Image (cartoon, rainbow, N blue to C red; front, side, top):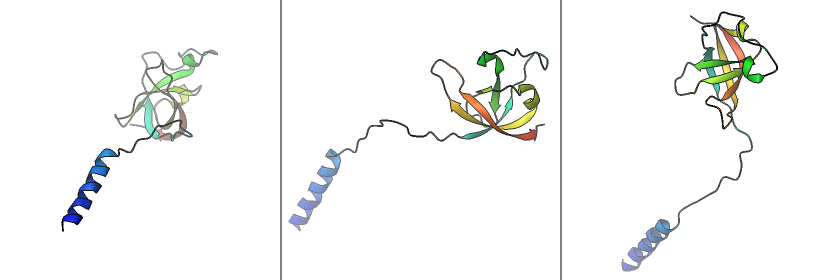
Amino acid sequence: GDEEKAGADDKKRTKRRLVPTAEVVGVLRRRGADIVATIAEDKAPEGARKRSNNARSNSVLAIPMDRRFPRCRLLTRRADALAGQRLVVRITRWPAHSKHPEARVVRALGKYG
């Protein structure tokens, strides 16, 4: 009986001392989540968005239906055509200096409302 107790106590002590640790050295591929969103309504009339070579001017803000996800910056030239539709978007990257991640349109689901 005493030997069994001693053996059990040794196992408990060993488990307490050993703490599994790891270090992430890189991400091979990030899985992008598909998010259902709509394009935010602007005060400017349709077609009034500026178009140029600057990527910022070809972007619109997409508001996800699920509030757990952040608002996304959609880089698209089809913003006027996609306005008023439910969209499936996928986050592609999140620049360190940006408040919103960049996303692309996977597909349009149709009119909302």
